Amino acid sequence: MLAYWAILILLQAAPYDPAIDAGISGEAYDGYTYDPAIDSVAGVDREMQMYDPNWIAPMAVAEAAPEFPAARYDDPVEITVFVDVYVDRFGAVAMANIVSSGGQDFDDAALEAVYGWVFQPATHNNEPTKSVINIPVRFTPDMIPGWEEPEDRDSGSFLDAFFPDDD
Image 1 (cartoon, helix red, strand yellow):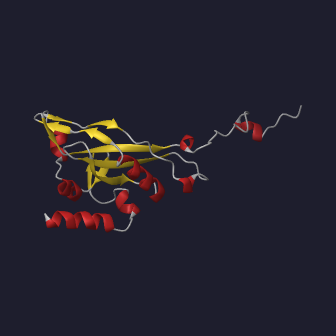
Image 2: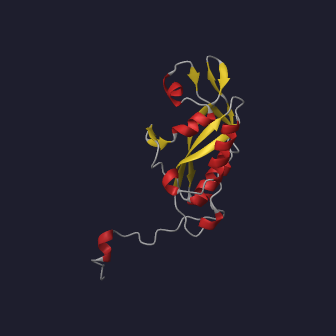
Image 3: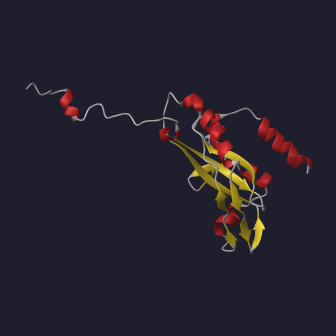
């Protein structure tokens, strides 16, 4: 039990490394990369979740909306951060791990949002169980307070720049 807490403390105290969050190390799983050691610490079995017909995935019953990072208001981009969310057998988020980073600001906002989610827990053989689910957290400029889509500055074609009408 002590080793479990030591690993959790190390995971939380580790410095931010975009290479790790981008999934450069680990194993491939369904189009992205994950660290099997984290699954082991969380007590989930991804293979069982994928192939066991008696396993039913968790379902979100309350979702906290992410907030576009205020530090990025001047750089309105569309970003999706992928987060592995570890759900306990009661439906609470026990742990979350960035598997595809959008940068520190967006990662922090994504984690803050998913920790506010509540789930109907996964079941295995009709018993609630721990699970992991990958959640895409999308950030769009329209999440910025007061955001207005810029008007199209030029309604002409690309060629109009080279061949203007001289009427």
